Length: 171
Image (tube, rainbow, N blue to C red):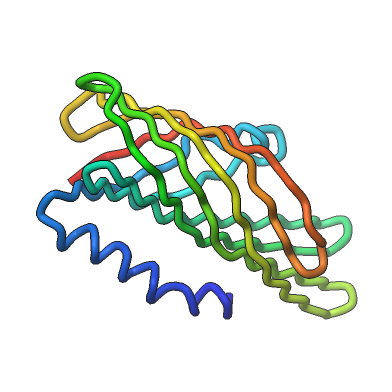
């Protein structure tokens, strides 16, 4: 969690930018399901979407904790990142967005048998495309797909796809 705390201040500055801009819409969002992890104990991402005319900024946070009682191992993974997207209104209630996502990953592995804790840090970066439908004045439902590269010290580098359904509520 040490490296995660180092990015909290810039994360809050981006949020403050959105809240201080009169033309901005700021909200909170949650991925209803991470489709690739659905069968492995689903988890959700939390979002703080900020709309600035044709720019869409989306800070994100996710956390997962898994315990294996057989091998006496507990694994905790934190992701903190941001998405920077171009945004186009397709119709009155529809918009699409496309751009980049990047951030940091921290993984903590506790081994109760050997009484050892290992902390690995890394980063992720990738591209994403999404569509958002505003079915009420301040509520939207959307989908986002993407590809990202994850680089964590002890796990090396791997590439993965993302597919999410996201519910957002704007203030």
